[in-house]
Image (cartoon, rainbow, N blue to C red; front, side):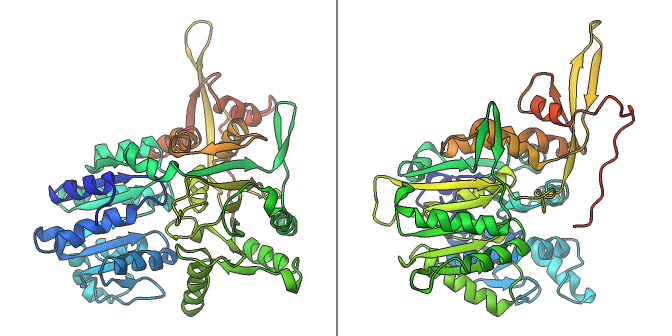
Length: 478
């Protein structure tokens, strides 16, 4: 059953032989928008109905898509490094990862002997292909490979469906212009089905010092204690629903330490279910964790108190929810995806369900890990004679765009998030940055006095004693 306008529009466009870019908020049914055309056109459209390859950036997301397929009466085969179940992509519906798809597309598949490479490549070229959660691809490398592949698929007349909630407009425009994708956006009526009842407030952990926001930085121990404090004050948080918390930590090592610290902060008689989920579990362990996530945080979850400590593996694709989400500072697209795990369900049709997302900054000099991409700011102005003048900053971490936008937009207040505000935050933090990446550079240009760039430039402006030579970027082994 097609329930939303953007799902109907995608179905119609694909039936007409046009590839699509589906843009809709988290939790509104983009997965179904990609699957439904294949389900309905198995007998009518040769390409749509022959084979579907559903591609994800992370293997941890495959289970959620598998469940959605089965709810529609489809029987998928999972194929990635831990579960190489496909026979040369010959099955009618394959759920796989981007590395498996790209190498098969190039005729050098990871999972099969080289003399069989033509079979996988041929299957890819006779498939309707869906590319989901593309924001998780590296903007400097992964997205570029996807662009190249989509461009070739367009030339060869192959149908593609790309889906996102959090890519900036510069990338959307690129998809449309060079990859031939027709943009399908959620309608106001579609968005109202989520934002009409869902009231999620964003806040940051810190204080104001004059006009400057000062983060209250958290190491693993203090983050666990912060979660315990919020847990104990649950009744005063102003959120609706059972006592459940999702904690997003940026690295697996930190997540494990937070999990260990957290387990020791509760007495046996009041200990909630504490779950750890990340991408490094073995196949069997991951299945057990996924079952627990469904049991305590899924669409039909129980009401037993529970805390989930997790990483980027759960920020997209997993159909989980909690009234309170606590997350380490991360790039804006990832942050909005994490926000999408707050108050995701409304089982009883309540007119309003309040949730809260709290952003904390990791402690330490390398708080930005694993988001280590570096860029430079280029201030473009003119001197007294009207000649263009360009001033270049020292290298800075790309994640600092998100940091300063949050400081300016949220500070020590609460910000009500809806689809419009989410798009505004993504535009301010990422659009100019991604435009630079698409141009093949890491220099982000801005006009003097333009925010948030001017404030960032002032922070990273070269000191007078530095030479006029271009500063060299750091190299790190993380």
